[in-house]
Length: 122
Picture 1: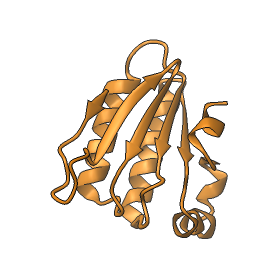
Picture 2: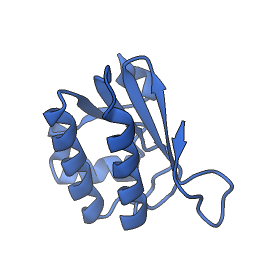
Picture 3: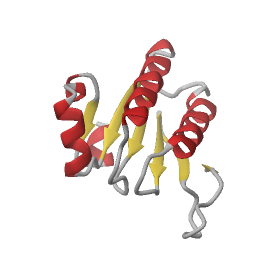
């Protein structure tokens, strides 16, 4: 399991990844997906998903309450990278306020949004 530097208020890493079968699951443990967290998320996904046999990248957003426009752009870039590696990017456990951002921007048509990580793995 890979992890990023820990946020000051928590002993858990801000972002971590783990491999389950052909999926890489990135767990985001911050409320605000800001520039630093996004950069770490992107780096960890590139490292983990760049290995052979990965077909799906799942980002667990269960802790994320705020997603700025920069975050949407970075997620789109991650999606493009995954597609170039013939992988699918799925967003799991999206909170209602964050899901509303995807709906308003019509990005819910671009991203595969799942209620749970387990559902995203299917």
